[in-house]
Image (cartoon, rainbow, N blue to C red; front, side, top):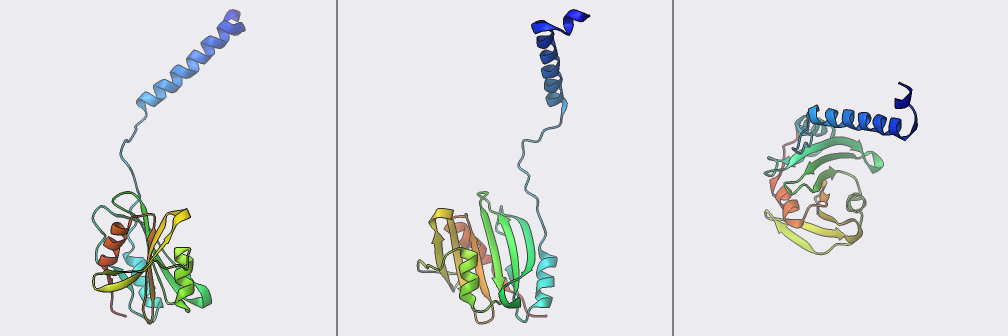
Length: 176
């Protein structure tokens, strides 16, 4: 028995037993080859946000095809303003976020959400004019729409057509 616990031979046997055990564990452990992105329903968060703000809340009529809503929250913005965040994994598995706030001045909110104050023109999406912004070092594309009572921002690493998909789904829900 002593020869199995000493020297190079004993070391090799112990190593083989450990590797065999690990290999056996990997063979019998269940494995999933499918991507798993947690889906979070944001309908209650949007409804709660609607009860706390003095304007009609904007939200998607439906999620764009293949998109997975994976985060949502309500937060306090500058000066006590309310902010709603809805996060997504897009169909191309990039990140996109929709945020809205009644923060004033609107430019401060938009600049923070887009990480830039530089506009690159405008886009017409669904009959509405959106400001286009791009921050190259973060590969962050953003669409901004400033309305009298609320500022809407769609931002993320998603490409322009995907961000536009989300913009076309947005509709204002009546206050109440």
